[in-house]
Length: 582
Image 1 (cartoon, rainbow, N blue to C red):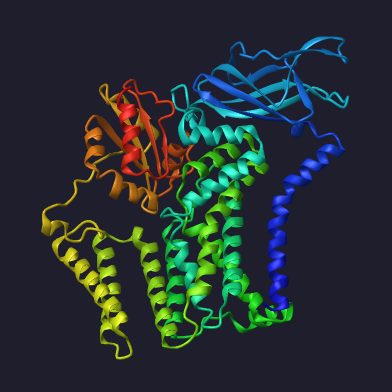
Image 2: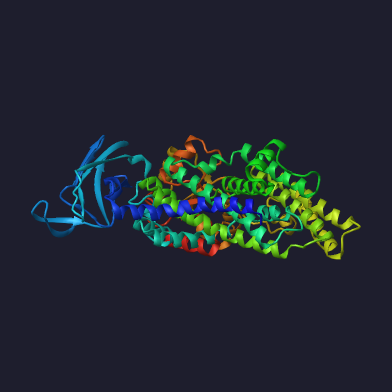
C-alpha cells in the first residue's frame, strides 16, 4: 500500500473516529463544567394515545429535578390532572425543606382534550449535585391528537413486548454502552436480509475490477472504504429522516433514481466485459493526481462514493431496529443517542462486507484465463443487479423476459465459447436451462419469476387479496365496516424488497392463510409516496414499509402487535395466532 493511499485511508478512519469520539468528548466536558439546562434535563413529549400525552425528562448523571416545580399549560387544548410519579424525598439545602426529587429519568402522563394540533408548555426546574441550581425553564412541544391511533398505544408505546420493546427500552435508557453493542448485533442480523445482500455483488465486482494483482490488504482497504461510505450516509440519512419525519428513502426509490443506478450498474458491467476502461475524466484525474500524487486515492474515493450511493438506493427497507431509532430521534430530537444507534447498526451491517473483501482478495485467481472468466461473470452479475433495481418499474412478464435473456444469453456464450473449460460449460448449461424456464413461464402466463412452471404443474400458489386503502378517511371507513373481525393493515411498496419477500414466502404459507381467513385484510400501497401515503405513515409513526398494524374487533390498535420488517412464516404465524385470540 502506497504512502498516499495510507494517508487517504487514515483520513477516512479519522472521520470515523470523530463520530465515535463525540460521545467521549461530550462526557468529558460534563465532568469539567456544568451542562446547559437543555442537556442536563433532556425534554421530550409525544402522544401516548388520542387522550393523553407522555412527557419525559432524561436527567444527566449528577443532576436532579424537583417534583413540585412541574407546571403544565396548553394552547388549543384542555389539560387534565397530571399523573406525576412520587419522587425520592431529600432535605434540600436551597429551599431548607424536604422535597421530592428525580434522578436519571422521570415520565409524566398528562390527560388532554383536543380535536387536532395544539402546543404543550412544560415548566420545570432542577439542580446539580455540585451546588448549582438552574432557573426554572420552559419546554415546548407541538403535538396533534390526529396523528396517533385511537388505541392506548402508538408507535413504540404500543410495542411493549418483543423486539420493538427491547429496542425502545434500550434507547430510552440513553446508555450508549448498552445501545451501541445491541445495535451492532442487530445490524449484523440485518446484513443477511434482501435489503443489504445486493451490496455484496457490487463490492465483489469492484474488487474483481482491480485485476490480478490485488491482495488481501488492498481488498480489505477497498471494502473498508465502501463500508465507511455506506455507514456514514446511512447514519446521516436516518438522522435526517427522524428529524424531518418523512420517508426520505421512499423519495429515493422514484423511477429516475432507480433507472440512474441501473445505468451505473450497466456501465460497470460493460467495463467488466472490457468494452472500455471505466475511469474518471482526465481533468478530475489530474486534480486527484495533484492532490494525492497517485490514482489509488481517487479509486478509494470512488469506492467510498459507491458505498454511499448503495446506502441510498439499494437498502431502503425499514426493519425494527431502524424504525425504533427513527421514532426515538423524531420524538426526542436526541441526535447523539439515535445517531449512535444508527451508526452502530450500519457498522454491524458492514461486517460481512469486510469479510467478503478479505476473502475475495485471498480466493480470486491470480493470473491466467480464469481471471477473464471471473470478470465476465461479475459483469453478468452487474447486469443482474441492474435488472433487479428496475424490476419495480416492470411488469412480471417483462421481468421474466429480462431474466430469460440474461441467463440464456450468458449460458449460450459459455456453451459456444471455444476457450471455456468443462466447468464453464457446465455452468453455461445451468444458465441456459434457467433461461428456458423463464421463457416457459412467459409463454404460460406465470406470475412469479421464482416459480416459472407453476401454471404447467397446476400448483400455482394462491395469493392473498387485500382491500386497498388510499387515505385516512378510507381506513376509518374500512375499520367501521370490519363487522367485529380483527383487522390487519399492511404497508407495502413496489420498491420494498422485504415487502415482496413477505408476499412470496410468508403470506403464501397455508397456515398463515388459514389465519387470514379470520381477518379483514387491508393494505396501503405507498409506492407513490404522495401526500395521502405520507399521512398514513405519519398517523402510525412509520418511516416506510414493511409495517403491519393489527386492530381488535372494536377497531382499536392491538398493543404490542405491530410487525416491523420481514418475518418468516413461522414467526409471523405466532403473531397472527396471538392477535386472533384477542
